[in-house]
Amino acid sequence: MNQTYPLKSKVIQQLDRFAPALFFVSLVILWELICKVAKVPNYILPAPSAIVTAFFDVEFSRWMTHLWATLRVALMGFVLSILIALPLSIAMMRSKLMSRVLYPALIVIQSTPVVAVAPLIIVILGTDDPSRVLITCLITFFPLVVSTTTGMLETPPEMIELSQSLRAPRYRETWQIRIPYAIPHIFSGLRVSITLAIIGAVVAEFVVAEQGLGYFIQFSTSFFKIPQAFAGLIFLSIISLLLFKSVQWIQMWLFPWSLPKNK
Image (cartoon, rainbow, N blue to C red):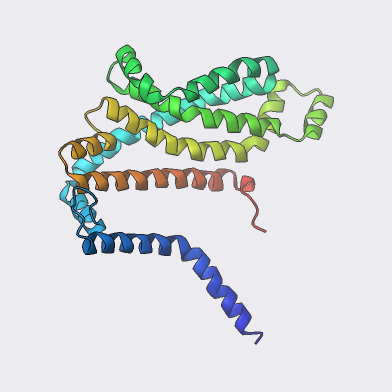
């Protein structure tokens, strides 16, 4: 009897490990069966097999061209949001007045639909990368500002008191105490922001673009190539998931001490 319990626990652990993959495979199989049994037309809901066929019908070089166009804008907007969010977070953390002034403005910017603002941005900056990068940044930077500011404000007060008793400069308090304590919060914001960067790039491509996965999806839909549009959508989702995991891998590589401890 004692030998069966470790065996059961190992089986349960393996099931827990592969549960997401099993759920995804089951969902795809169910999707395929519904489309085949109900004879759903491809222009309404294509079966997964039709989507896979449509994906390989598109030339690999064409996929890479659209992928690079989307990634370029998404990553530039993501980096720009980091360069804006970090100074804003430090300013809001250091000064209550700055926090009272900046936070409502950030709320207004975030609550304004970017799709409505995008045409104005394009009129001002043109149809090239700068306008699309700015649109991406507007969608991306807010979670990073909030998470970074929250993390720095949650630094243990005794560490701040110790720093002040040693007469450490404010910049050392920020860079050597507050920011290290905020690393888990910063990476939480980065994980959210990197997925929003893809959304921002696609929104910009919907408004004005001649390349990119968003443009590809819109172009395919306009010509009723629905399986091809679904293939682009799934490809876009995979890229977004890979970028999300990349942020996790960077955290594991550079800041393994910031990861939550498994109990």
